[in-house]
Image 1 (tube, rainbow over the protein chains, first blue to last red):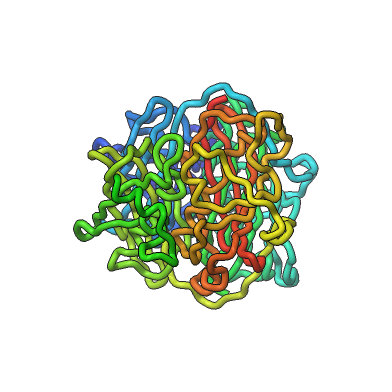
Image 2: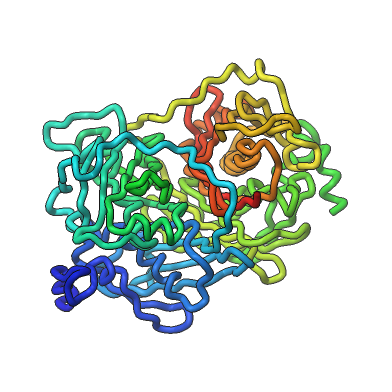
Length: 282
Length: 282
């Protein structure tokens, strides 16, 4: 993976591509088949950051010649660990309607499926609109101190994080009655937001159980869903500004917890809502 | 479908099975293949009630000889209309781990896929637990008047509904600034709750846009996700009592809206959280 390691130092202003684009890059093998490779810059404790895997699956659909419109929803199921190295994605347009298209996607490595997904793409129409959710209270991004996740979480070094509420617990933090984390977050080096990057951001929250218990423990996303409210114009308006991301859990128990989150533009537009079910041990 | 129509009058106390069980009944055709049939008692405006389809897909996994544990999460994508009559379900265990199992499921009719789904099943472990969501305020079910959806929505006649907040709009209701509906709901005739019935209940909410706009318009679920927090003991405790169901939207626009909901036991236990993306025209 030497050739990928060097791209860690390139940025959008340099001669190379952004490291995010390297990480989600796919090569078309045949009609529905793509090959990719895990990127060390997006490594997690075991295997890659779930957000980069989700973004890569979305990319497979986006670069498929038959794709219709833009992402409306995506569900990714993390079935088993993805090892460092090459992988294969099969993305199948299962059904194409006039304004929506349904996809089934599988990521496998050495013949074993590690990730399954379904996606709905489609075209937008002008309709009545209303945002009922309310963005969390937060000072402007530049007024909030940067704070990183621990250094050993490689993928987090690609994100500029400014925690407004519920930062990652330290050794003395103790238990917290509320699982809410709110942060300003964007790619670093900055990169204009697109659907793939927004998908990765949907998984940017550290496990809520860490916050509640005030300690780290084994935990991993089992299933992730993203509903895309943004269209391409909203993404263009946002560009590389920080996104206001917030998430909290409804229930923890019997080895699992859920999480619901919102991703807001810097101008207060709801870009996506996202939900996940997470495994934990502790 | 004459033979199915007669079952409409049977109940759990009679000689036949409950109409819900008739509606989700499947016959195993080969290793991963099942055949079923739409049931007129669960008809919606176009095709069957989405909740009964979701429940039927869950049932396919539950009666598969290789199933491991109980449902943890389910995502169903409604790709195209299901016509009255026979259908086929293929349910494939994509990956089986020590404590979780991942499923890919497709429902098709005359060779065309109408519904795709993924499910995660698994075993529960005793862990730390906490419910952070708060059940909506509601008087006991028996103190709330029964109120039906309009008669032409056939499936709704299988549910006893008692609206606490946000009932289906009438001709004079007008717009509503809040999309929240909260109701006590259970199968009628009463039937002990199981995972399939809980799955169907996750889709029991009429489209939130009707409530906001104070009028009916074309609308249909595109993708539905259910996270199961209940285990079999919680379902047994609940039995055939009414479930307190609540749902609201975060955002409406460009032809789609999302919905997040919670299903609470009569004793205030969170049985499931559920999310969906819905198409609308208006």
